[in-house]
Length: 542
Image (cartoon, rainbow, N blue to C red; front, side):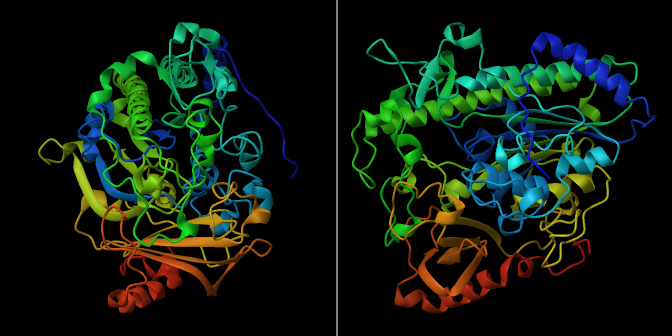
């Protein structure tokens, strides 16, 4: 199977007619509207910094309103804190060791390198859905065959905003009056290329899709519409008016801005993704451990919040459109971040690690007639169950009354449809069900010490793998020897351990004698893996 290159930048004007034509062709097969629609929204690098998650500074009124009629999970983990591995994992329902995709750099299309795995949108497409994608859903490039897995996953070619070409362009106004490539980048949209931004274009695409869907004479086919927002991924480029919502004097630096107690160097990520940008380079910080100065830390946090509010405003447009077009009562809405992002915690400013600020994400799902008819004091349904993004595939399949993928065997390379996640749909009916005992993430490293390629090593440079596990009480990680050729870890060669009993991962107590028995217990549990953490009941489809 040869990778094919595909670049799709359909204009907004031309798209309306294009989708209308596709809908008329593709919905003439007589599917009834008994099936529920799905709006699948992914935000890039979004930690649980939402009002509904207890953040009292960030303003996210639209997502907070969605949470009030949804189920919200307080502990949801991505399987790897970097874009391509995380997205391929939850879009195939398999973990990074199975997809064999462990980084953005040097990524190989999973259908070529690991197996012809059915994707989440493909599963809906095969069940008769019209599937469409706008923005960053699959990670673009080699990881998804330069096509975002079209035509397997999508009924029409995925839409990518034309202005994404300027992602790292010098368009950020500086105090010197010149334009720069900055991480902090509030802009005047009218002065931007094409006078717009990528997420605005993707939203317009989605709005056009919903409008044309409802006006088509043959709009009797259910849809699966995925919308991927780039923000708050860096650069933090957003309409400058959103910065006014966050006066700099009200911004606080992280409560834990220092390196954790007894942090092994292999666990640290030196945020090389930021250092080359003009505004960060101008700070002349020594590599790898010099702290971000507080004055600029506040500016980054301020801009991250502003970019999050900007993204929230666009999500609000989609939710309003569902109401206006009469689709809200028959559309599941799933909102999730692909992984988190450190805002100065542990002296870090990025993802690329196993810290909970990097792996944990917001996860909100609205199911019409199910989540909005529960009395929870106006705050929606809140679950403390341990869930993972790899659970999304089987969950959405079950909620839409499609075939729920069976649990994958140990070797699933020749099985097109199965899942290494667990549908958490039963929790919508009964929050007290016993659930997973642990959730799992991982991250590769090229060496024991921080270096320039620590954050994003090539596959051939991966010599250590950090396998991480969260339980309801503890966070435990082992960094073990890793062989990139066989893509196997050597559990007998441990480079470092981390054990955090505090919720912010501030104090690594793994080497303290008082915790030796607990370390051994958690080590045994980690090595038994995710299968051993599944609930001891009949919720698993086998």
